[in-house]
Image 1: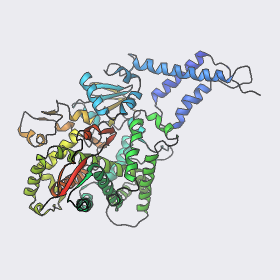
Image 2 (image 1 turned 90 degrees about the vertical axis):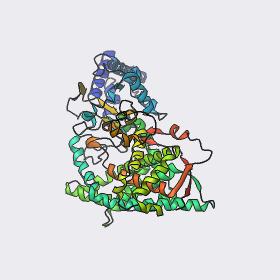
Image 3 (image 1 turned 180 degrees about the horizontal axis):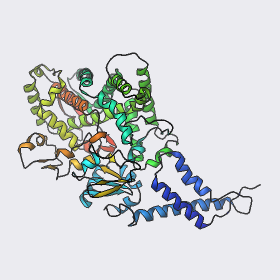
Image 4 (image 1 turned 180 degrees about the vertical axis):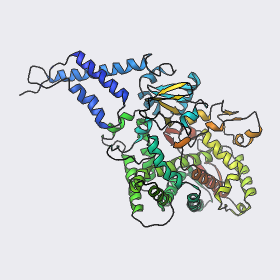
Length: 557
C-alpha cells in the first residue's frame, strides 16, 4: 500500500494558520511541546493520510501553505494599526521580527545600535514586535523600582536547561513570577547581609593576596623585574577563582594553573548562544535538541553542579556562600539542594564575569589616564598610612571612604556597564497589563532598559557623557553645572531583581583595584594597539572582552 495524502482546502489551512497565530500570540511557547503542536501537529490535522490518488507532494504543499499563511498573518498584524505598539516609533523591520535583534547581536555592538535608535526616535522606541526600549528616567521606578515589574521573556531565552513543569523552579535569576522570586530571593538577601559580608571579606583578602603574589612572581621570572601580560585574562582567572573560594569554600586553582582545563574559557564561550536566543526565547527548546549547540555552557554547567554536589557532601562549617544559602534556605522552608544546584551557575557567572569586566575596565581607564593612578595612590596613602609599606587595611568597608576610588569604579561602571542592554521587565503574567506613566503596557509586551544608553545620555550625565571623568562623582553635589542623575545609574540593576551581591562586588572591586595600584607600576604594553580594547568589547548579554595587554613591575616600596 502507498501512503498518500489528499489536498487540504486552502480555507482550512488558512483557518489553522490563523488559530495557531492567535494561540502563539496569547502565549509564546518556551518549551518544545507547544512548538511541536503548533507547527507540526496542527497543519498535520489538515492532511489526514488516506489510501487514494493523492501524493506526499500534497502534504508538502499543504505544510508550505500553512507556514506562508501563518507568516503573512503574523507580519500583517505586527505592521497594522491594530497592534498595541503601533503608535511607538522604531525601525520597520524591528516591528516584524526579533530576528533583527539576533542579526544586530552578531557584531556585539547592540548597545551602540540602541543608542542610535534612541537618538533618532526618542526616549521610547519599539525594538521588537512586542518590545519597547525605554530611557526615560521618570518611567524607571515603575519598570525597575520596588513597585516595578518582574523579569521579561528575555530570561526564558537564557535557560541552559529546560524547565520541568512538574517540578518547582529554583533558579532565582530566571524566575518571572514575583511571588516565587521573592521567596527564592530571601536566602540571597540574607546571605549578603552584614554578618556574612564579614566572612566573605576574608576570602577577598586571601585571594587578592594570592593574585598579587602571582603577578609579582611573574615579574621576577622574566629576569627584568617587569612582565607583559593580558590583564583582562588574569583578572578573569582571579574573579573565577575567587567565586570558587566564596561559593564552595575552595578556589578552582585557575590562577595557579592558568586555566589549563579551560573551565573559565568554557564559561565565556557558553555566554554566546544565550546572547542570541534571548531575542527569540521560543527557539531555545529546539536548539537544546541540536547536536553541538550550547556544548560549552553545558560543560561549564555540569562543572558547577558537580562542585555544588561535592560541597554539599562535605560537613564543612566554613561560612562560605554555600553555608549561608543552605542555612537561610532551610529557614525559609525552601528545599536546599535543588535551590543550591539550580543557582550554582548563577553564583559563579554572576559573581565572576561582571566583576571581572568592571575591574578590567577600571585598569584600562587608569592606564589611559595615568594621572589618576598617582592621585589614587596619594589618597590611599593619606587615608591608610600603612599603605606606604605595601599593605592594605583589613577593614574593607573603610576603603569606601576613599572618594576617588569609588569615583573611578562608578565612572567605569557608567561607561562600561557589565550588562549593557539586558535589563528587561514585563507585566506580571495573567495580569492583563500594567500602566507605566501614561502608557498602558499589555501583558505580552516587554520593556528593555539599556544601561549603556542611559549612562551616556547627556540629559542625565553632563558634561562629557562619553568621557572618563571620575571627578563628576565627587563634585556634582556642589557644582550646579554638573548633571548626574543617580536614579538612572543602574549597573547592578534596581528594585527587587537587582544584584544581590552588589555590596560584595564593590568590596572586591575596591580592594583588588587598590591592591594593584598600590603594589605595581602599570602601563600599556609597548606596541599594543590601545584602540582594540573598546573595539573588542562585545555585548553577549554580559560584556565580553578582548585582550588588555599591560606591562607590570613591582613598585619600590
